[in-house]
Length: 209
Image (cartoon, rainbow, N blue to C red; front, side, top):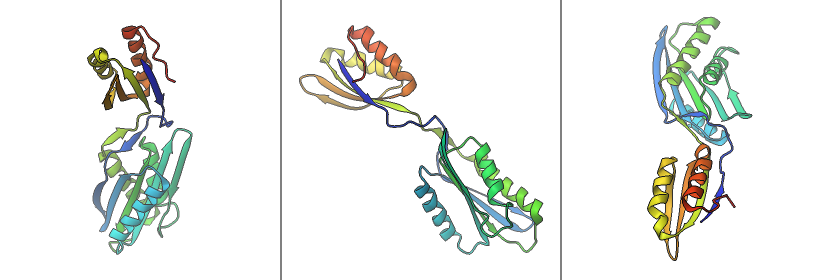
């Protein structure tokens, strides 16, 4: 049996927002709308921000923040979008940073209600607005994986399928010819155990090539 594999992701396992969500609340007549979405690149984050600003073009402020990446490679951004310096984007980014989320973009939209909130009031309002979506969003993990290409005899097919399932493998393709060529995907934490299981079953080396 031959196995070839490669590792397309090198980031640590992080939580990301699963979907785009909106939350809204009112603070002293000012209406705050928080929109949070997954963004896997700076370009995606900027496109999301531009779309939300267009959707709420009549708002008084659209305050954007994002965190892209994880581990040792993180890009962060925030803007106060016309609010007093340090009262909007920075507290929103602080919430996002403390949430454990990565690859996430957030825009907090404000419709001014006629009453000034003051510096402290703005910080609280934007903090609460960020917390609303961060606490509500579904979370998923982008897991580092191995892709494996296997050539196996027909009589090993069912055993290999069971072994793959035991180690959280996903069968991406099967090609039936002289032998069966299978393409599988495994969480990186499971691949060594899968490889050992192959070796024990077939008494052959299943080392990546």
